[in-house]
Amino acid sequence: MDILVTGGSGQVGLALQRLAWPDGVRLHAPGRAELDLADPAAIARYVADGGFAAVINPAAYTAVDKAESDVVAAFAVNAMAPAALAEATKALGIPLVHVSTDYVFDGSKTRPYEVDDPVRPISVYGASKEAGEQAVRVVNPRHAILRTAWVVGTDRANFVKTMLRLGAERPQLRVVADQHGSPTAAADLAHALAEVTLRLIADPAGPTGTFHAVNAGEATWFDLACHVFAVAARKGRPVPEVLPIETRDYPTPARRPANSRLSTRRLEDAFGIRLRPWQSAIDDVVEGLLRD
Image (cartoon, rainbow, N blue to C red):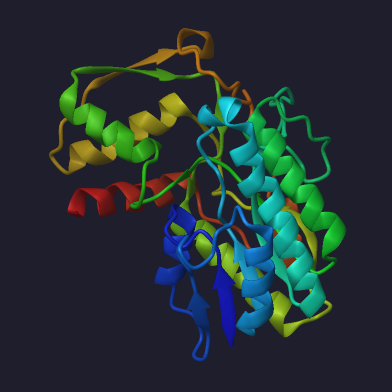
C-alpha cells in the first residue's frame, strides 16, 4: 500500500517518514525536483500515476512574515496545491489528509478554538491556509483537515532550536508572553496523521471533516522558552535569563493570533486520538536536540 507524503523534507514530513508504519505500507516523499507543488498540472500527473491509497499533505509555505510580501508564492503552495491535490484524489476516490493551522483564526477568542468557530485570518499566511482548507473541503468529500499550532521538532528551523542556539550565545533573552497557544511536537502530530490516514484507507465511511491536533495543555512563548531552558539546565547546558515582553515590543510584518489554543475534542471523539501534554513532548524534542 503506497501513501504519498508531500513536504517530505519538512518537520512533519520527516517525522512521518520516521514512524514505524504497518507492514506493507510504503511512503513516497518526493523532493521538489520530482514534484513541484507550485505546478498544479504536475501534481495531477504525479497523483494519477502513483497508485496511492491516500495522500498526506503537510507541505506548506511557512515563512509567515515573508508571505506578507510574497503573496503569490504563499497562495501557490498553501491554496492552489491543496486544490490540485483535492481534485486529483477525488478523481481516484482516495482520502486526502491535509495539515492546516491556528492562523486561520484571528486570536480574539478568550477560550480554545473549536473546529466550527468562524475563521478570520489576519495575515497572508493565514489567508492562504484558509483558502487551502476551503479547496480541500469543497472538492474531495473524503478529506480530513488537521489544524495544528506551534509545531517544533528536531528538524529544520523552529522555536525550540532558536531558543537553544540563542541561549548558548546570549546571557539574556526577551520572549513574548501575551500570545497563548498549544506547543506541538512534530513527532506527535505525525502519529495523529498516520492514525487518521490508516483509518480512512481502511474504512471508506470513516470520519471526515476538520479536526484540531495539538499537544494537550497551553502555554505562552515565554512559558515554552522557560521550559526549554529548564530541560537544558538539567543537561548542563547554558541557561540565559528569560524576560517576558508583550507582542508590541517585538513587531513583525505579519500579525500573530493572540490566542492560538485549539480544542481537540472532535479528534478525540472521532478517532480516539489525544496527544500527550506539551511539556512531555517538548522534553523529548529538547533532549533529542541536545543529543545531536
